[in-house]
Image (cartoon, rainbow, N blue to C red):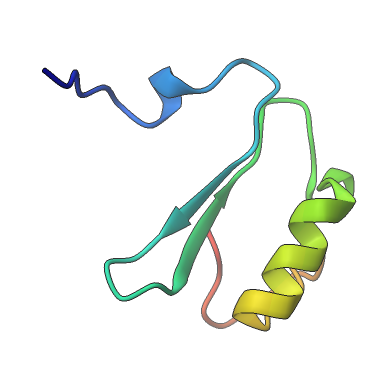
Amino acid sequence: MTKQMEFEDALEDDDWGLIISSTGELKGLFIPDGKEEEDVPQTIVEMCTRIFGIDVTQNYQENTLH
């Protein structure tokens, strides 16, 4: 039996989260309270750059990640 929960409920207060669409595209980056884009852990930055071609430390006007 599997239990479903809301995305934010599955995270600890200091956890980061990636939201990926059903087609495998990066849809969003969950940033914990009190953190900013420049605080993204280097492993997440590298993964998003290599796999999705997106620098999550940049401010985007179009196609903004949420």
